[in-house]
Amino acid sequence: MKASYDNIDEYIADLRASIEQNAECANHHYNLGVALLSKRDWAGAEASFLETLRNSPRFAEALIQLGGICLQRGDLDGCLRYNQEAAQCRAKFPVPWANMAFVHLQRGEAEEALKCAKKALKWDENFVQAQATMASALYMMGELDESEKVSMKAIAMYPGFAPAYNNLALVALERGDFDAAIENVDKAVELGFEVDPRFLEELAPHRK
Image 1 (spheres, helix red, strand yellow):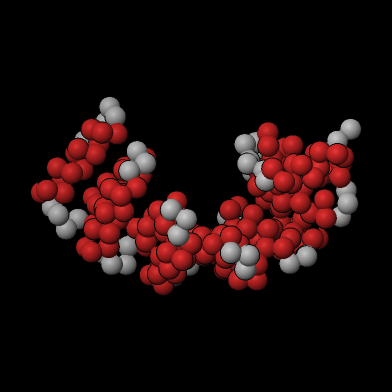
Image 2 (image 1 turned 180 degrees about the vertical axis):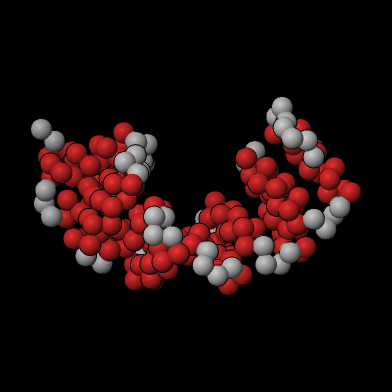
């Protein structure tokens, strides 16, 4: 393998050549999968990650990547299953727990989402994606003060983390504080967050 490459296709070609020489190297298959993901070749990446697992069944990162591909397809069950397997393969690994929390949140299962987010934050208290999911779950459960605290903590560490502003806007709206809701939702949009159009429509009459 070269130390550097001119483009991703050259890197992919080199990985494939290395795999021909050593088809049982799980790392090569995994790296090929990641490279193919960068080209949005979902099927090719999936095949590479499955090949990774054939050679190294407890390769947690490959399981997580497969979960991400499932999520891309809208397969929440598959995403959850792969991340559950990843969590079993490696103790104290926050990423699969954060991903499971996100899946539960998408299903409207706030309490399960909160449990998984807490697990992720147990292993990495500054995992901002897990904080965002926790804040959303707390909001869904009506725990507005706790949701706000989590979002404020995330912003204190990562001022440009857009989902936290969206969560603060939701909390503010629930409290009837339209000015704060508008301020925070505008910040979320400014930072690139795709705010639910229905939320923006609800706030529109309250803009000054």
